Length: 302
Image 1: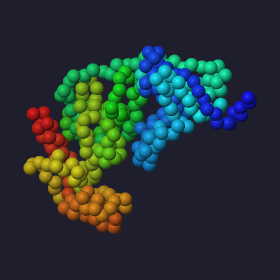
Image 2 (image 1 turned 30 degrees about the vertical axis):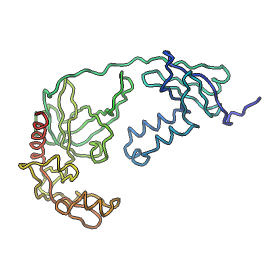
Image 3 (image 1 turned 120 degrees about the horizontal axis):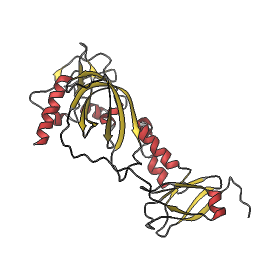
Image 4 (image 1 turned 30 degrees about the horizontal axis):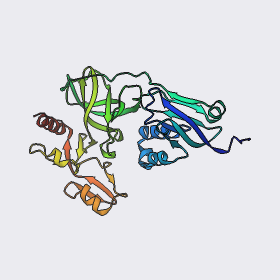
C-alpha cells in the first residue's frame, strides 16, 4: 500500500516511561501545544486574546492524545509530521511519523536530570529595597530544569531605580526575581511602566514582594489612584486617600466597561468620568504607600 506523504493517517504505537507507570504522558503533533503554552506565558496580550486556546488544543484529538495504561496510543497525523512525547520530569522525545511506522519505534521516556530548588527558610529579608522603578525588561524563566513542580511563573526583572524609600541599593539599576500565580491583568506588575515595588533579600537572592502602580502628579510626585477592589485591605486611619491632582495624561479608558462596572470600579468619590475616560482625583502618595505597606506587613506578622 502506497501512502501519500500529505495524507492524514491513523498512527498507532507504544509509549511508556522507564518505570512503566505511563500516567500523564502526552503525545502532541508538531509540538503545537507546548509552543502555544510558552507564547501565552511570555506574551500577556496573546493570552488575553486567547484565554481558552490551550484547553481547545488539548481537546483536539488530531493534535493531542494520551496512551492507555499499557502504553498503546493512536493519533491522526501525516507522514511528514513529528510526534512529541512528553511527561513532567522526563526528557521529551520526538520522532517523525514516517520513522515510527517504518521502524516500528517503541518510545521509552527516561527521567531528565534536574536542579533542586534552592531551599531558603529565611522569613524576614536581610534588606528591604522600597523604590519607584521604571521597567527596563521582564523576561520569562524556564522552570523545566528544576526538580518538582512550581505553581507560580518565574520572571527575571530589571528596573531603573527612580526614587528610593528603603535601604539604599548601590546601583541605579536592579535585577530581581519575581513570581506570579495567574494574577489578573491589573495585579500583574509586568503591565506597568512605573511601579513602587518592595524587593527583599532572602538567602542572598533579591525577590519581589509587593508593588503598587504609580503615576506622576501635577507637581512631579509619585502616587497611585484608589483601587476600590483592594481598598478594604489598604484601609488605614493614618493613610486614607487624599485629594491628588494627577498629571493630565493619567486616565483609564472605559470603552470596554459596562455602566455597572464603571460605577463599581471608578466611583465618583475617587474618579471623575469624562468623555469615556476615568480620571483619578484621589489616591495615596508613594511615601505614604511605603508606610502603609509596613503597617499592613506588621499586622500580618502578628
